[in-house]
Length: 70
Image (cartoon, rainbow, N blue to C red; front, side, top):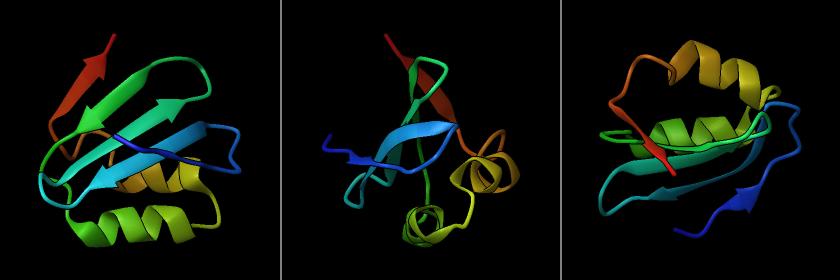
């Protein structure tokens, strides 16, 4: 999946596949995670958020099925 860089202390890059509703996030602390069943508006809102890390914590973490990508 193609990811775009984020200007964030928490998120290095992220990408979204609308066909599969999968959001992929590379975190600054290391690790890449995929989140399934994510609606398109969440991807849009994450990209537009003043703080991507805060948006993730409040709207994505523990809300969507996740998978760690080794």
